[in-house]
Amino acid sequence: MSADQYAFEDPTKKFADITPKAQYLEGAGTDEELSSSADHGEETYRGSGRLEGRKALVTGGDSGIGAAVAIAYAREGADVAISYLPEEEEDAQRIVGLVEAAGRKAVALPGDITDHDFCLDLVAKAVEGLGGLDILVNNAGKQQHVEEFLDLDDENFDETYKTNVYAMFWITKAALPHLAPGSTIINTTSIQAYQPAPMLVDYASTKAAINTFSKGLAMQLAPKGIRVNAVAPGPIWTPLQPAGGQPSDALPDVGSQTALGRWGQPAELAPAYVFLASGESSYVVGETLHVDGGMPTP
Image (cartoon, one colour):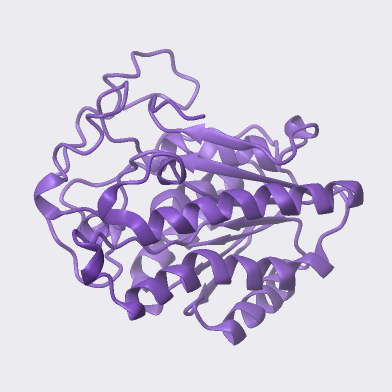
């Protein structure tokens, strides 16, 4: 394990002790159920006041990338609201505890972002609980592999788009009136937007939509002083993967196609989200920042 995110070490050997096994999780899955625990920076992320006094809403903040972002934001000085499914309460409370341990306010907001009214309520409660909002991270996502296109049913297709695209639209639209100049919006896209897997047609297409949505919205909001950017992760070890995101028997080998030859960990994504939220990225607009272990993209 690294001393912190600034440690000098061989990236091909990082997190060598985390070895995912073949596994299937029901529902959305939880961190507690993972065959090998993911690293969210719990023991390693070291803050330096880069987001002091900021107020962030992170969707999917109970586990995976969202959890790592919530931890990093808190240690950088931000108060954080997280949204998550009610079934993920145990994971969510653990992240709430870590945010509070960093001396920051945590707001837990369970619910289903495929519901339009919940999305509006989510933003309202985040603003109320935090006393404002100036960072929005649209990160929650749904990924279910389907080997044959004819087996991809309407219900699954619809839910994937509602989770990944519609919720982003609804939440962003509700948040915008609260975002002053200097605020940031960060959306999670994916390597799948560039290198779509045949078994992830619906998921990959949502990630391409997120990419274009982010760039178009960035051009509209930049003159108002609000920056929009995206992060495109590669294969990252989160509950989404064994909960139907990948075939169970493929899990031990996912990541081997990257240049680093391994899964990425949520902790490795957090610094990208911190950079895009902080003033250090003041001239970065409409960018997709790739954190994928070396998977060439256009």
